[in-house]
Structures are given as C-alpha cells and as structure tokens.
Image (cartoon, rainbow, N blue to C red):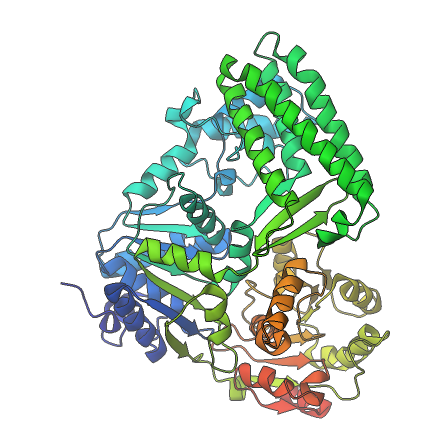
Length: 635
C-alpha cells in the first residue's frame, strides 16, 4: 500500500528524522500530494513552487513510491546529474523504495568506442595537447562503466577532440557497428528501458518524443508519468525539436566522414571525390552569397535575393549528385550505407526548408562566421504537443519557480496546448518582507536613450558601494554588458565578466572573492545558485522583452495580430514577466539570505503594465530612495 506522501515529508515523517537540516514545509507537502494525485489520475498538473519550497523532494517522493514508471526531465545536464547522484539516492534511502533508476543523456555525452578507435588509427591530430587527451580518453574508456563525459575532467568540455570521439544520430552505425555490444549509448538505453524511474534532460526528452512522432521507435520507455522540472524552458525547446533544420556544418561533416570512410573501401574515393568537392564549393559560394544579409531573419529576405537563391538551388543540385554517388557505393561498407542514408535525410531537410509556401511553418535562416543554417519551425506548438500528450496516455507534471504572470497560468498553458490543467501556486517560505528590498532608481531615461547603459551604471554605483560589491548585474544585451564592463573596470571590487571565462569558472571565482561584481547576460538570468553573503544584490538593466530580431517570434506575433489579438499584451508582456522572475530569483536562495533587487527600467513606474511586473515578483517592500538601500545594508 502506498504511503501518504504528505506524511512522509511531515514533522513526524522519516525525512524529518533522517535528513540533516530538513525542515517540514506545508507547501512541499501540498505539492507532493498534488503530484501523487496527478499520477494516480493521469492528469496534467502545473505547479509553480517558489524558491525554497523543496520541489525536488515534492515530486521525487511520490515518483519513487508510486509503483509506476516515471520519466523525470530537468532543464540542464548539471541539474540532471545532481538529481540522479545526490537527491534521488537520498529519497530512495529514506523511503526504502526498491526501484530501478537510470540516468540517460543524449548520445553526444557518451564516448563512442568505434570513433575513438578510428581517431586513434587515423593519427591526424592538431596538437600535442590533443595527442595527450586521446591517450587519456583511451585509458579512461577501458575502466569506465558509463562512458559519460561528465566523469572525466582532464579533457576540457570544449576540446576539438570530443566531436571526433562521440557519435551523432547521423554518423552512428547502430547495430552494424563492430563495437555495438560494448557501446556506452546502447548500455545506457538498455538500462533506461528496464528502469522504473529514468532521469533525462529536456533536450533528450523532446528529441525522443519528436522521433517517436515520426514513427522511428523510442529511446525512452513508455511511461505512466512525465515530471518536467524547470518547465518554463519547454516552449522554446519544443520549438527547436519540432523544427526542421539544414546546416552547412551537417553537409561539411557528411563530406569529411565520406572521405574518412573511403580510406577503407578501395576505389570509393575516385567515385566520391568530385561530388564532395562540388558540394564543398557550392557551400562556400552560398555562404558568400548570404553574407550581405543580417545575421538572422525570415527566409523571405533570402528569397528576395536572386543571387542567393540561385546559389542555394546550385547547392541543392550538388547534394543530389553527392547522394547519387553515395547510392552507387552504399552496399560496399556499413559506413557508406549510413552515409547514403544521411545524404537522403539532408536532401529531405533542404527541400523542406527551401519550400517557404507552407503557412503553418515559419521559414528562417541564421548565419555564423563561416556557415549558415536554414530552419522551418511550426507557427503554433500547441497542436504537436497536445498530440504527444494524448499519445502518451500519461500524467504530465510541469513545475518551476516561474510559470505564472501575477498568479495566472494562461500564457504558459496556451503555449503548450494545455486545455484544462490542474494548477497549483505555492509561495516561497522565505520572509521576503524582511529579507529583501526592491529599489527602483529615479530619473533614468527611456531604455531606448543612447546613454541608457551609462545612466544605469551611474545609478548602480552607489548601490554597489552600499552592498560592498557582492552583486550580479544582469543585462538584456551583450552590447550593454560590454559598455558596463568598461565603466566598472576601475571600481575596487573584483570584476567578473561573462565571456571572459567559462560560466562555472566565473561563478566559482565570484563565490571565492567574497565581494565580487559579476556582469552577465542571458545565461546568468537562470540556473545560477549563489547562496549566502557573496551575492547580496541583483541589478537588472531593462525589462527582458524578447529581441525583435527573432523571426519565429515575429511570425507568431503577426499571426496573433491577424487573428485580432494583441500580441504585446498576450505574448510579449507575459514572456518578459517570466524572464524577469527568473533574473530576480537569483537574489534570495536560502532562508538566511538578505539582499536588494535593483530594477532600473523606468517603465515599471511610467507604464500601466509596470504594475503587472511588480505584482508577479515575490512580496518585497519597494522603495525609490537610495537612503533605504543604504539603511538596509547597514542593518
């Protein structure tokens, strides 16, 4: 018989007895009961749980005691590892639940033994450093049971060696691989198929759901319940996985992999050399033709450029010639068979992204320094997501600290096609009235003003002096971040600037400094946890409205306008509210934290929608007086 999950997490329960520092929380118990009910009834639950609620235990306890097969998905691989290696073992130990659990990541996270062997045989490495890294990887491959890249710190995450020794869906040989029986990906997937609870990340979950939709089978076992943590990320991620994309890089990799495979098939290179060279040349000409366009935009901009379209059509023809050449060699090796299938897939993608006539899809392009990508994204994600949920016949639990706008879940539910969800809003147990203060500086110009960033820095300086550093300054653009970095370079606090070092390194150095000032853009607005005095102030330059250069967003807003809606009110404001809640959420991470949130955007006071933003934040006192900030820090 299943325990009452509220009792397990209550004052008399085993967590209170056995977990050091565990404090029973009514909000955590209420969420656990709601999750248990959603799993039993197989319905949809949206649960917003404020920071400090203890939502991880609130969903893990009902998951492990349910007797059901559950998929738990997290927003990042870091959180995924933390959940599997720290939180889940603790919950299993305390509850005594005898379940099989598995950790599953995307294939790029696992060493590929076949490609490792190929790279060793090939011997062409760019530096002595890479030679040493390859030796390290070969030694590790012999002793690792998982092949998970996270195990090995000696080879940096950004080493050029990793793409050569991991596989992609395109270049994996599958059951034809000579090392299939020892394959780390296969072992991880088998463990997942047999497990009662599987911990994945959103990227893998949606990649698998998208594949299942196309009828290719599934990576993840059929589940009775899906629990999605950090669910505010889902709308954007789902858009990526329901998109069709063709990139210059995919075609370059096809060519280089074909050249490598020719080394073991006599005479194949003579047939493939010219088609490979022709696609490489066509790619280069196409990239040059696109060079005068903005970095990203709607595909109509490409269609209006006759020269660029002509080069794209030439590229389309070159890929077809390469596919035909690969077809003539496909039966000569397992590798060439796989390469031919990849070429067919690329032709299908290129055909689809070049067909801009479909009204239900947004066609757009993106340029990088040397390459380009073309995309087709569904205009409305609700129908495909609704279909997936109906097919799964499972419970869906979506949770995060930031899902509502002034207590309403309509925006989030509409994006995902959640027609009649059960909703639950659980406030944080933190005492924001005494632990925090919101400061709205006076006399700042409109954010479109040319000197806006300088004025923000001027307003921030006395706050930084009052807080003695110990601050995050978060920006909505990299340009503003760079300008602020110039202005703050002479301040007496250690300065940490996004882009000068990897994120985890900046955070470690910031914590250790004790009085640092960290300047961050998008990736520091969420998923960053600095508890304690090291972070006592969060300064935000502007309300985080989405950049106007996003062609998918532009198309969605245009579709709303055509349907008679108000896209600013229905979409742009709610999305910005949720993003602001994420940034503001960096401030108070623990029951003992104290801090000041500085919101510089004057629109909070001058525009009617400003009240909606403030009403959506935790219940902190609001001031416009700098003296109140100084008094707060002196207390």
